[in-house]
Structure formats: C-alpha cells, structure tokens
Image 1 (cartoon, rainbow, N blue to C red):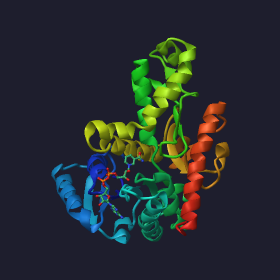
Image 2: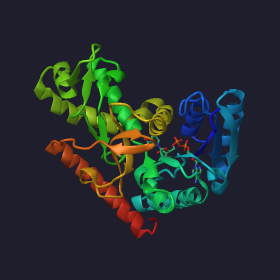
Image 3: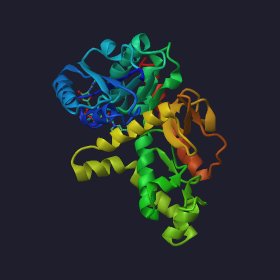
Image 4: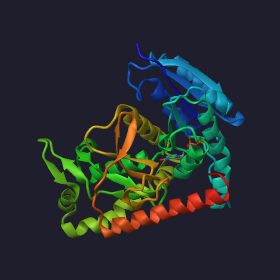
Length: 340
Ligand code: NAI
C-alpha cells in the first residue's frame, strides 16, 4: 500500500479546477496505486462552486480518491501538502496596468507562498498555472524562504502541447512521433516555440530532424522559416485567444491536461525526450539566475534538469532575449512593489 499524496488546488471552483480535479482524483497524476487527498482552496465567493465539485468527486467513487476538503483558509489548505497547484489568480480587468495586475496577484501568491513555507510537506512541489504564471511563481517562492526555490515552477506545458499538436497536424503524423520541441521564456505572447532541435521518429524508429520533415511537408527548405514566423509561432502563442473566440470561454480542459502532464513528469520522471517547463534559472542559456523561465527540461528523481548544450540560431536567440527581458521587467516591477 502506498502512502497517500496530498494535493492542494487553488481556484478549485473555477473552470480549470473543474477540469483538473477529476483527473487528479482518478489517478492520472500519480498512477492507480497512489491514494490522493485533495484540498480545494477558494475565496469565499468561490466556495459554493468548489463544494459542488467536491460532491461530484464523491459521486465518481474513484478508488484512488482518499478524501476531499474544501476551505477558504490557506494555512489549512497547504498543511502537509505534497503538491500545490496554484490555479486561482486575479485576471486583468479593464484599464488595469501591468503594475496593478502584479500587485493584485502579489496579494494572492505572497500569502500562499508563506502558507506553503509554514505548513507544506518537506518534499512540496508547486506548479503555478494562474497568470502571470512565471512571475506569480517568483512571488510565491520569495515568500517561502525555507522551501528550495526550484520547487516553484510555472506552466508552459500547454504551449508545448499546442506546439506538438500544430506540428503533428502539419506533418500528418501522431503527436507521439515528435520529440524535443521546446518553449523558451515567458508564458505570454513573447514565448518562443522552437523546433530547431526537434526530431521526427518514424515507425521503424529512424529519426529525422524536424526542420527537414517540415521542408518536405511544406514543399521546400525555403518555406520553413516563413511558416515558422508567420504561421506556427503566432498560432501557438495566440492559441488561447483562438480558443476563446471559438469556444466562447477560455481553455480549461487543455490547461488541466497540461498541468497533469507537468506534475506527472516531475514526479514520475521523463524518459529520453525533453519537455518544457518554466523553472528557476540557474543561469543556463544566458537567462539571469533566479528568473522563472521556460527551458527544455528532463525530470529525474523528482527534480527538473535543464537540457544543456543546445545551439541557437540568431533569430531564436533574439526572440528568447526579448521574452527574458519581459520577465526581467516583471521581476523589477514586483521588486519595486516590495512583492519579492
Ligand atoms: P476561473 O476564473 O474560472 O477560476 C479561477 C478561480 O480562482 C475562481 O473560482 C476564483 O474564485 C478563484 N480564486 C481567485 N483568487 C483566489 C485565491 N486568492 N485563492 C483561491 N482561489 C482564488 O479561471 P480559470 O479559467 O480556471 O483560469 C485560472 C487561471 O489560469 C487564470 O489566471 C488563467 O489566466 C490561467 N491559465 C493559465 C494557463 C497556462 O498555460 N499557464 C492556461 C490557461 C489558463
């Protein structure tokens, strides 16, 4: 018998919460052998919705679900938690400047970081989903001095998965045959989807560079760069807006699926190919140490490792520099607001 894992989900009464909790409870994150104790954190206005979700979780009769607790008290929600999924955030309102947005989120992620510092389990792992995710992770980490800063991560896995889906569609292959695509930088419009190290694995196991496969699919090597610049990168970076346009509300199930992927890989490890996650920079690839930025990553023994040694074309480098500059500006702003 396995010891139960305690998972805290903030914003549990929201859309992503509704798509996420049932999958965690059914074993998608930790496997069929590990019982899950769920803690649902909401603000008072969201409690009813979270309580309704808790009733439905009971009714699923998942054998992997040990218990569900709903609360609006952060200390209670994070006591003994092993995995914190910080989904609830303050969205940008009309006329709200970036500084206002960052301070409103500082008021959420600062106290949650502090509650994690005080009460969470020693092995706590945190994924920030709520936007601006990278900087919210920085704020939470700054309020948790006793938790190693690298345990605070932010989600770019949805962008990564969106990139895989676009490539698979264009190449008319299954997503599983595409490896080593990466999202660099901030989870924002400045993010850098990069296929230059990508590999297409054939049915017989042979590997082809993704740029070569794209040249063939698009009808010539000269067509790849314009397709990347004008179609692929904007499509991935603006997919959230496209979903809102078509669906009438923002992406929730795909965001939840990406959160599952991120934590599952972090806990269970990755094999072979890398994935993308926003993690604390150790200075790799010229990203200033301490920023939470997306990198190509592997997970081993419950820790992320940055894939080293990748070459970078000048245009990719320039895009990464722009995205990292945006992260530095956000960091400087939260510093000047006294939030980190
Ligand atoms: P939603 O508005 O449906 O739900 C958010 C919930 O958070 C609400 O129920 C609200 O009451 C709750 N909440 C607000 N402040 C809270 C606090 N201090 N403590 C606990 N709960 C709190 O929003 P949705 O669609 O679930 O999205 C949540 C966040 O995820 C948004 O910030 C969104 O921008 C972000 N997001 C991030 C993605 C990524 O790739 N990183 C992808 C998609 C969404």
